[in-house]
Image 1: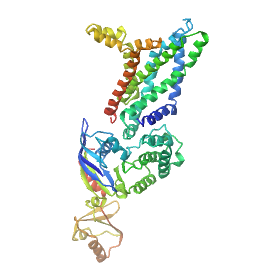
Image 2 (image 1 turned 120 degrees about the horizontal axis):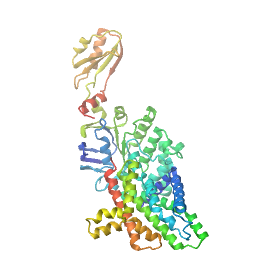
Image 3 (image 1 turned 90 degrees about the vertical axis):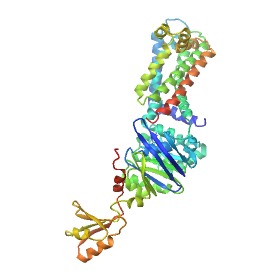
Length: 244
Length: 307
């Protein structure tokens, strides 16, 4: 694991070497503001809480996070640098994890820059700052799950646009898997345990719980194991697809 | 030593490398030749651990590329085809990244980078992002990255492809200066390069080995080996030349107005030709004994190769 920091540092640096980082952060901040104040009815709700802010994150991330993840591997393959990277004496998992962590930390950074929301709500009232903290934790875990899926899709498709669309599609499925939209497709024929299993995969249910201040170890494990599983899949896909 | 045993790579549509076996010893500069699509790059990708062979294996200084991939990769400096680099990084940042992945820190890291930078004369562009560099500089960055850890084995995939003659010369000088006590494998389809830097040439076609020898040995396989080309001020008697002992035939090159007298295999015909010139009192403006034409040998060896 000695080389993971080198990969991490290079990857994180590359976000800031291009306008990508700044564009992403600005768009993220503007959109999260718009969602919170206009669509979320932050003021109208008359409550000192950031629930209107966090409620929209699964949908905001649906498009922004795959955009962040799509270049992770697709770009390496397109430019041929993957051949350079994979012939250095470094483990596959270290590369996959290093790249993922860089993207995840970057997403966390963008999230931290929403701190004026916290200041605002603390200025206007007396919110439950514990719930706000868990809200941030949940939001970051959610972004991680999206990123892990996006990383795998990026390894799968050489074309960044295809990687983006695949990731959006898959993330959407994970969001709505607790909804009738998906469950109805199963309810006619599937046994109850499968129905429960599919419903329990939903990002929304778990994210809602965490962002309301209920940190259940199972929900944390859910997100972390989901991330681990998708990263493991990324390792396999990178190995299969690297030379295409 | 690099030992390649029965190395094979099959893709869905075709077999890129087909049962390739050879050895490369320390101190050798091996020119790896073949037409485009012959399997040169695929072989190099397997040697460097990027692609897994379908069957067969190879070992780099005793480390098996399949079972001891990391250890084998530590011995190798590799320049992939087209010298891919991270375009958005500065030269300094990029070499720093490679040094860190190779496990160097602190003073050791700086020393390694400085040495590679000095060797490739990259001082002036250290702060520039790689994508703003000229092709020649990009190639030099790729080479700097490959020699950073002073590897005992260098594998360079078309190191001079697309460079101008001056840059080609520089890269060849570098390869020559590195060649002592190392194993260097260079793939190329530029034949002059083989005579210029290689101590041995391996020719492959359609994934199979078709020739293996020193550049001189390959040249001697040419039908132009020991041929004599002459340009006369007057029309020369072609029939008299054809009648000389050891002569296989005479070719007329209308464009240059020259005659090429071909030797039978193993024969030296220059003395006879020279004697005839004196005897007839021909005015000859140019007289040239050929060592052989590599491009002609190359074509003969790889003919019928679809690619």
